[in-house]
Amino acid sequence: MCIRSVMIYACLVFTHAAPTALQDLQVIQNKFYRRATGAQWYVKNFVLHRDLEIPTLSKYMKDASERFFSIAFNHPNPLISAAYEAPPANYFIRSPRNALLDPPDDLTTKVEELKKALINLME
Image 1: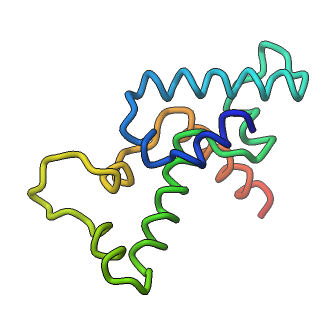
Image 2 (image 1 turned 90 degrees about the vertical axis):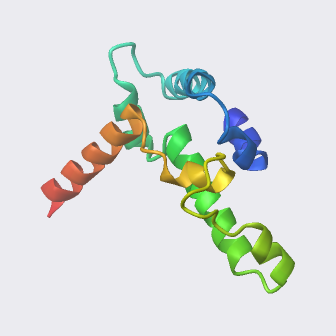
């Protein structure tokens, strides 16, 4: 909750952050989860995220950005919806909307695979 509150407030700004900076925040968040649950050192981080049903930082940021852009795009004020339109395909400057196209990191991928495997086992 310590990191997540900052991420909610400035999600669009953090999408431009370097991957190493986001990884540092993910490490801190993992340490909080480990302390809160009393998990031992040998419990893998993706297992913590799966069991707690909490998305990784990058997935959470991507989901929050998607919500923001969908709200802005559907806003009744035409100036607001025009300000957050997607850039043209040949636009090379990285915009906040381009972060939605980034591939997921390794931890997020592993958590998603485990969730799918668990769902398949329950069926």
